Structures are given as C-alpha cells and as structure tokens.
Image 1: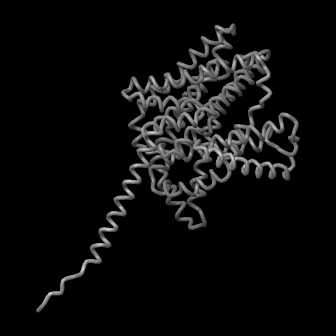
Image 2: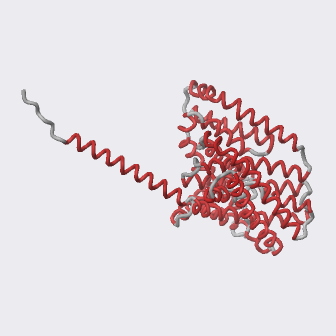
Image 3: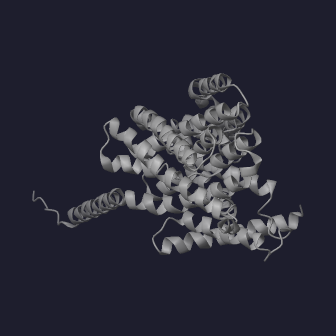
Length: 424
C-alpha cells in the first residue's frame, strides 16, 4: 500500500468525520452519528467505483482496520477511567442479571425466528448468537457526550456489555465446536485475577516508578503502555482487546493520576483514533446489499429481534432487580448497537461451518444492514431516553452558578460597607 494515499485517506477521514460531527450537533443529534454517516459516504464512493480503492484506502485495509481497533480500545479505556468503582460494585448484580437476559432473550428469539424462516437448527442458533453481543463503543461515546456515563445506568451498561462479549465468545465457540468453553472460562478467570486483583494492588507502585523516571510525558506513556499490555493479553487469550483496555481503565480509575490524565488521553483519542473508528464503521456498509431481497428479508428479521430482544432482555433484567421503568429502558437502549463483535461472530460461524457457504453472502449482507440500523438508531434513542437527566444536570449547574455568583456579590458588598471609626 502506497503511504501517500494512506496518509491522504487519514486526512480525508478526519476532516469528513469532524464535519459530520458538527452537522449532527447543529441539529441536536449526537456527533458520532455524523462520523458514521460520513464513513458511509466515503466507503460507497469506493464501492460504486466513483473513487479507486488505490486512492481512498478504507477497505480492504489492514492499516485502517488496526487504527479503528485502536479507536475502540481508547474509547473503552476512557470508559474505564471515567467509571466510579463503587458505582460498579453497586450495580454489579443488576448488570449480571441484565447481561444474562440481554444475551439469551435475543438468542432465543433469533433462533426461533430463523427456524420459522426455514433455517436448520445449527444455522439458526449461530444467527441468534450474532444478536447477543453489544458494541459498547457507541453507547460509551454518547453517554460521555451527555455526561451520564458515571450514573448508575452508565456503570451498569459498561459492566453488562463487557460480560456480553465474553458470553458471546463462549457461545460461538460452542456453536462451531472450535475450542473448549471450559478452557475459555479458565483463561477469563486468570485474566481477571491478573488485572482485577494483582494489578489493582500494584498499579500505584507502577505509577510511582513512572514519576521517578522524570521524563517528558513519562506517566502518560506508562499509562498508555499498561492499556496496550492489558489489551494484548485479552486479545491473545480470547480475542477481546477492548475488555483488556476497559480493565486497565478500571484499575487506574482508583488513583488520582489516572483521573488527571483523562484530558490528555481524550486529546489523542478524539483527535485521531476515535473518529477513525466511527468513520471506518460507517464505511463498512456497502449500499449495494440493499439490492438483495433475501438479504433484506433476513436483515429485517434480525434488526427487529436485535432491537426488541436486547431492550426487553436487559430492561426486564433491570426491572427484576428493582430498577424503575425509566432506568430499565435506558439500560435496554444502551445495549442496542452491534458492530465488530457481531462481525467477528459471523466470520467464526462461517469459517467453522455453522453457517454454510451457500448462505454466507446473505448473512454477511443482512448482518451489515442490521448493524447499520442498530448503530444509526442508538444515538438519538439514547439522547431521548436521558433527556430528563441531562436537563436536570443543566438546571443543577445553573443553580450552582447562580449561587456562586450570589455569594461573590455578597462578599463584594461586604467589602464595600463603610467601616465605623472608633473614637478614643
């Protein structure tokens, strides 16, 4: 690949992504939607032959795919850093029950729906698995923008989505018989021991060492190194680098140094790799898939089940655990988007024989369509679901500012009062 055109594509993707971000925010929609839509435009310039893939190197491109993966790694790392551990503990049981129902309700509905369409049991089961794993990146980005990531719903959504991925990986292994589910569970247990216990009690010493080095941006570099190492471990053991990044963020969130570095890490993430991730996600959809009637039918079934199954499963799980309808609905809506994990599960299912080659193209097209639907509807739905919370936060901030201004005026008035001169 010519480095000239790779650099050119990076520049174009960032410019278009940020323009899309701006346009969506002008109409009071989450900016991430604009980045995805701009990616769809750029990708289809190539798919329809208007621009040569030699010059706009979005697909296929291992380099862009890697940069996009870096984007979601940074986003989940920031999500972990911005999470209050006490809130995670508080919402742990709700997240667990919501995860289980949020996985098995769409799985069962997907299996049943595909069976009614005439697909054999194994293929229908694999199709149902495509609907199980949530792509937390979009939800994290929107919740961060709205300022609700630290809420109970935000913390529970993060926990549940991390568990979603693990369950989805275990289920696809079971479906294709390509590995040992017990072995996967063992690796996950060891991973959580290393990241959740050992690192938790030693990370402060690691940061003291980073400070001791006394080099420019040394602490930032060492923090990013920890993120990459955790991601590498999770990727090697169960193909889930984003879970490693999230755990690194959680471990560092307990220290003031981790919180202090948030803005610097955001500068790297939102200035480069996060927009690339969302532009790349949009560019994955080839609009020509809408020409296939069979793919459209399958996509319609999968899209309906994907949305209803997740919202109902996670939402009902939250209601069972005592949350009210509003918070349960927010929890359910946050689980709608699917992206990279659904595609990974699809490729594993095809290569493992759970989905036969004769149906592979149809499932690829249908998966791309239902992914696009889930990605596009989630940001506005989340904004709608949290509108009262956001308005309440704004009112609280305004009241706080008014109180601060009032106190300041009072102090100024006190200083201007004439002092009584005491006569001897």
